[in-house]
Length: 242
Image (cartoon, helix red, strand yellow):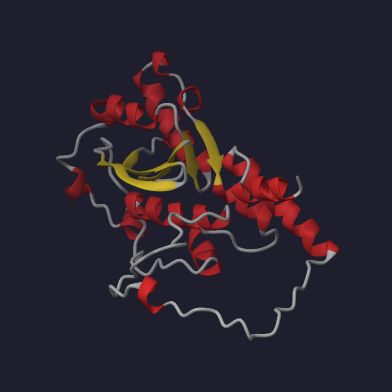
């Protein structure tokens, strides 16, 4: 399963008012693991970037002066995202701008939806956390994800942060050290494990309540819907009942 975490920066809020994309940032997930493969491009928008937009992302007109135009990078960008599921926070905004750029190139380019699936993490967050703030910064605080480097908005940085948020929201981890032999300090866990005493008292087993089981099942439904596959935990539960 290939997913592309995507973010853009623009000159303003409405493509219908002549605003354009000035930065695209994407990171790749395959089977819920970051691959290290990414796409990043600054774009000359052929218009002035307003001061209020520069205050948000810090991308100036002078910086963009020698950058390629969208038509020069469109084929490479479309090839990178083609066939993947795009994971975007507030997808209608970014998809609307990309469709606008494709539309400027001609009808043969179609729309993003013709090339990719789309998953909106803002919509997902609102379903999971109704009545709460669900900005990217708020989700970072909720899921204990470090976004201290996010002084300004940036498409590649924000896509990297969103990848961590998405994996946390859907109950995933990029790596499970179930039998890790070494930690980052170089310690060998196989050598420091102590045998379990046979004289210890039996552990008390506390079963989940009916309410907890219902909540767990609902969460697994959400994970399955967002991931498009049966969660491993649910498969293990099914096997244990056989």
